Image (cartoon, rainbow, N blue to C red; front, side, top):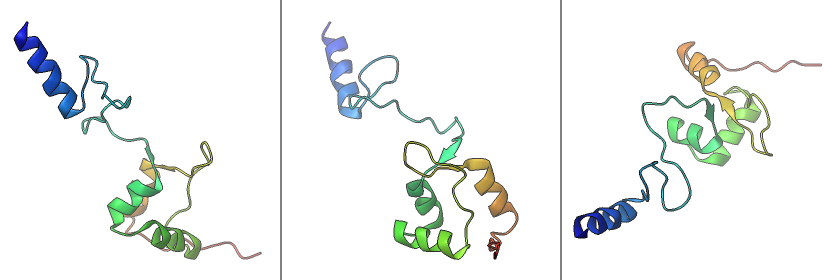
Length: 98
């Protein structure tokens, strides 16, 4: 019984509260083995090593592809579209002039 209590408290300290892998904060941990399908601004900032405002300027200047869609008021990118952009050498996105 004491071993179970110690294990449970250690799991709470590590952020995991049950055998389903749910954290004590109500969020499931993200496994690195599962590929991410959507990337958010924070994800791209971390990948590129820039701040959010710099990323927004890059989007406006056409230096990075615009978000693929709007989801709950937040602009996500589809991870494969960013990977394809990187694979092409990160070309500048030309805007259509009307």
